[in-house]
Length: 445
Image (tube, rainbow, N blue to C red; front, side, top):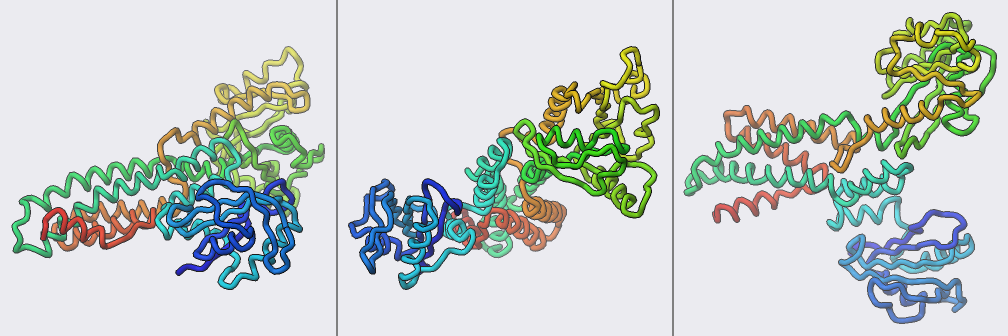
């Protein structure tokens, strides 16, 4: 019998409502004791008063919900108390619950852990639930909601369901050669394995969109000193995140800002100005600039329109996909044609702006939203969201390719078994009974 655990299921701190959750065999006893009444109807909110069973003192008024096993989130008996979210109430509720024998505070994530172990949700759904709680942008919310509903797990389980009969039939042919099994069992495995290899390869070739969407697309702002890189960062962030000064070399390290850009998560980085370093510290900062730009998903190089010579063409990390922001156009003479002549190579990605006068910036923002969307938009298809998924699928793919090239049936079966195991690792469904069920059901051995 599992222990009964309890915890605050809502965020800590002062709030109008706080939710306390209990899960385990003693949940119903605790609810009846602290409310002094019979259990409410299952899954219906019921008005109640919570009292201290020792002193009889009323602690709070609120709502109680009762979820009998197995129709609950964890599969155990579950109680939820919706009470006022003050510190004093919370402290007294925990004091009262702590007096019950066999009750203990839940470990972080333990309710969801129990849900997984009870088969209520699989690993991918649990991860999606965590991502949904942590989602800060609309795109992250959509992806997390799909995963929490089991879309990703359903895909992996469908591959596993296709592979299990192949393994079961092959093992039947190996283990029961004297039985009158259908002809061509081993040959029939090939097309299924070939199809699965192609589907998994296509799934892996997603440009890491899911992981990028979870963590935020990395955008690096770089260029010579005093061209307005920090001012651009501050304008995009709508706050003074970086120090702005006329003194060259003010920015010595990478400054990060997390943004919601058109519903997509972005990690925007301001970097040290690129020039011949004047000190060892500045040299380290410039090295970090090159490193951050090389690691970024999208690059923005900033130049100043009023400078007679801007050496951005000499910066190795500038390429055709780099967005050029030509700042300080308000300082140009009206008749100048410098914008069209000197930066002709950047014609498609050139954005003349004035950060101080807020000229041309909205067009730049629309460009960034478009570029970020191209890299992060996952549509309605399930995408890989964690390195764990990618690693397990890679191992599965390797095993399938080995199985397809094996001439020995025993070795082929072992590779198929490895592939099945890695698919099971993704969702948490690894059970040898599945194989036995198929063998005996299909062949009646």
